[in-house]
Image 1: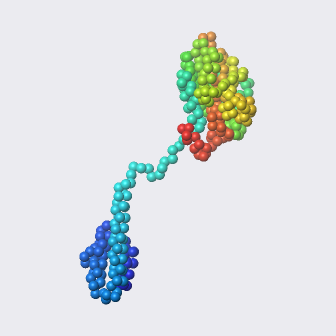
Image 2: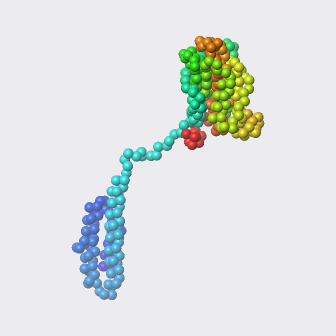
Image 3: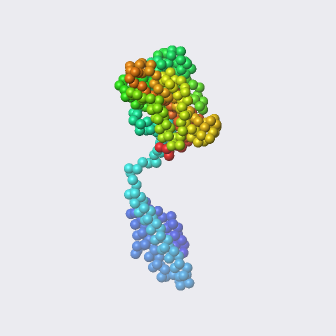
Length: 339
Ligand code: DAH
């Protein structure tokens, strides 16, 4: 009898069922009134009394293991059923990784927002431009070095069609077609034939601002610059203007801000001067106004232009310009919190 019980024990251990009906059949086979276990109990009555103890323990073990196994299998089926109910079929199979805005876009929008608060609106122009809008209308003399092959990409060797080297070209496009007052900013990509290195690239981004109206003065320009610098780099930022030269502005200046990395004390970034240059600006040259059929005796205006990469470098201290165009996710992911 012991052998019979041992065989049943191993049968129970290996017992499987593929659905609830099969399981119920097994339960009936082993546990129902006329099942295997009750019939063992019947046989138990005839066991000699000296074996009763040993066999009694074994039968109890079999009874317990059988009901445990049947309950276990039952639970599995029940869980499987409720598992099916829990699945949300509208969910995506894998988590969808969220992208981030590019640092250049983040800073471009920040610059746009600051000028929008001063009443400027956005204008855009083509990247493939003609010589007139990039150079001639902006008062570049025929032999100006910026027209040199080394700076400018020409399209199909046609000296009249170029990739714009600055967003100042949008100024003239707007002035030609708009009656003053004009108050625009022109963000966009520009191209120069430069050897690519950590500090120069053959394409980069600029934002240009132009304000034309009656009685616009250098003081208006200076106030707009100060407002921009403080909004962009913090209330404590100082500015200074140095005389400079651009063909399309007279007088022209370059603006430095107090180095926001060392707070003006001097560091390698500002070459220990405490100041960093961030943009070019000036009063629009009367020739440029006249080129666009705007009466320079009635109207005056200011313009300014800055490189977005330069501003981004100052804000985020990116040491290598090439990182902006390599699309390395390890770099781009770092701007998640700025999005
Ligand atoms: N176009 C100039 C450049 O690419 C930047 C610039 C300087 C724009 C002075 C201006 C300005 O509008 O007034 O370097």
